Image 1 (cartoon, helix red, strand yellow):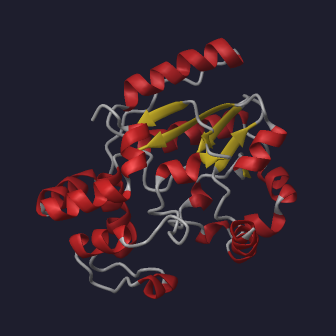
Image 2 (spheres, helix red, strand yellow):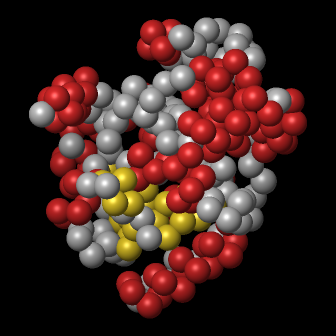
Length: 249
């Protein structure tokens, strides 16, 4: 009862918090978006598919006018570059409207994803979201300090930028995506999805564009600078992500 009440209030306060799925109805394809997890290649591939097969943006906005008006502030603030030609839905809406969609998602090692989040919003020279101060974040925090602070916040209170990927993609205790493009192995994972799309949807989603992520060198540098205490805390905080998405790593 209390959980249901909290979810109702939270949906009113943060209407796009649980809108993670970008849908291309013409292809029967749905992408579950976890902020700070996708490579630039994934972004380019989805943009190409949207331009070629996507719905008009006006159609998407007519379905959710209030939500679409606010999408620029969603999660990392980058959603506006994703929704062109695609319909943005919650997991519940996706299962009701497109029950047969081929659902996939891009995921990333949780520690590297945290580093990408830090560089984008919380690192030196960045301006953290105003609301983050209520959760203990401060300007000019080091990455280690940022990571430990994130580890002290549960998923219910977390922003999607660092909320666990399994929590984002789970609906009724089940992960909706059946195919994952791991940041660490994008080409073979994308090729497996491409074959499945051919079999199920009768479409060719093309090859994954080859491109270097702009901040990847900075992410790697941050990861070399933290100690085992931070790594252990992150592994504990994102235990389910590691168990489900990176069981063999």
